[in-house]
Length: 377
Ligand SMILES: Cc1cc2nc3c(=O)[nH]c(=O)nc-3n(C[C@H](O)[C@H](O)[C@H](O)COP(=O)(O)OP(=O)(O)OC[C@H]3O[C@@H](n4cnc5c(N)ncnc54)[C@H](O)[C@@H]3O)c2cc1C
Image 1 (tube, helix red, strand yellow):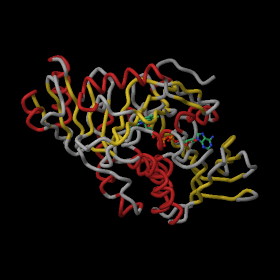
Image 2 (cartoon, protein in one colour; image 1 turned 90 degrees about the horizontal axis):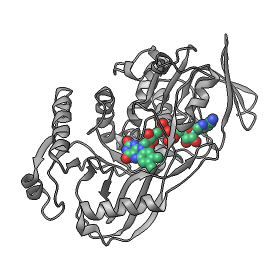
Image 3 (cartoon, protein in one colour; image 1 turned 90 degrees about the vertical axis):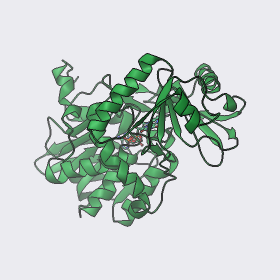
């Protein structure tokens, strides 16, 4: 791209959200230029745990999560790859009556929104998962949840978007953007200048920088979930597991590796560096051994982490800018935006094209931080 090209929509960020948006906008016939500082899916979207779950979400986020769920089934038709998505179910384990009561309350709320879960006592767990889980008080199974390979998803959306005619620019950071009567004037580190009618800010843990270019403040905290993977062991775990309170989550892929996490590693988003912490990895391994004693001797072969933007209220910013017509934000997914990514692509596209979306997103407005007294610096 040279000179100052014109496009209908520019997208900052090549995670799942940005790549899904690029594809959806092309399906709607708009011209698209997506800019990614590194390679598509190289940040949180590509290094996450791979949990595709509705279970446990904030009630405000559930409609979004429900909208995303069937898209995962359609990936082969949509992007030409199943991204190893499997609807294995998500089982959340309780170890105390209080934790079980929390699962019951969530389950009742979710049922009203059309998400079915199966509450199970200790005997039902033992019957459904013989010899797999010990000492749990009970659990909640969301059978429609599952898991996928995060390495595959954003690149698959990006390839499909490219095939559909989107310009996907990798290794090209956007260094600034302004808006005037003609549209958004966007500049990149390679000196590219483009004029776009709309701008989508899906820049992940860095999206608050983009918001600030337009006088908007979002108090992102940067955290790095600590992840591990074991050597392959015989395949026994047919379900994705989360543990109440302990922060452990674990799944097993068919080739036998156990992928698990819990606690946080270290991240420096300005340097774009993150690493797991040994003591946190040891704690997660000990928790895994307590939860699944049969897995206690599986040797860890790798640990890693990734850079994710969180908000205190644990829900993202999604919606139209409060200051700038044509600007759409979607970021701060607070550790659970992988499952949402495909629906985010559709929702931000609707916001660009129609100025509204059929999914309720009021709770995610960036306005909530202004109300809480935060100011743009
Ligand atoms: C270790 C880990 C485990 C997780 N586990 C799960 C899970 O199991 N399930 C789940 O649902 N969620 C999980 N999450 C959260 C999930 O991965 C994220 O919420 C989601 O991937 C965010 O997608 P995104 O497209 O918004 O952001 P990202 O994937 O972060 O993409 C944003 C992109 O924007 C680019 N960018 C930023 N600034 C610029 C710029 N100026 N110019 C050009 N490009 C720019 C970045 O390089 C980045 O690639 C996890 C996150 C991590 C880190």
